[in-house]
Image (cartoon, rainbow, N blue to C red; front, side, top):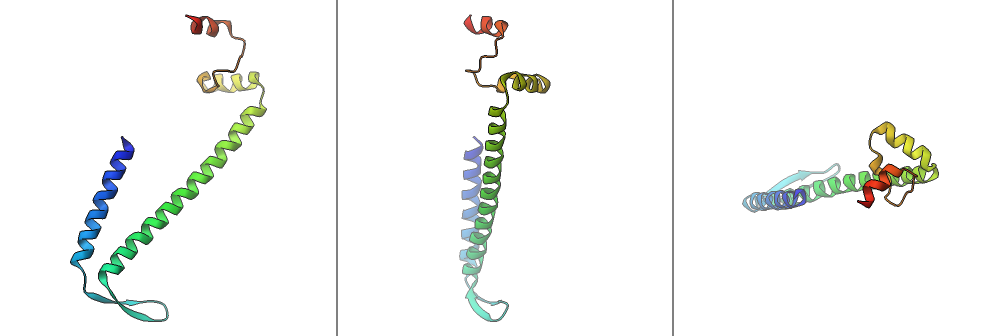
Length: 116
């Protein structure tokens, strides 16, 4: 559902930006560091919007890559620990359910519940 709202809001923003850009078509003087240019305002608006979207995308991509590396590091660390250590850590956290279902920790009370 969150993805649908994100898509709807993105399309709405694109529509509003397109309408705003089409209304403003007069040329404007843009000052760059070493030169000036007369560019239609529609290109300035659309270019700025696309550049902002690209920057936001790259920041999100960087964060996702960083989080994926952290997940791999933590999974490797978890696989290097013994099942007893993992159980002790999970019991301290109060959620033993994060262990995989195929991990046999030798708890007869859990086996009785799962066989019913």
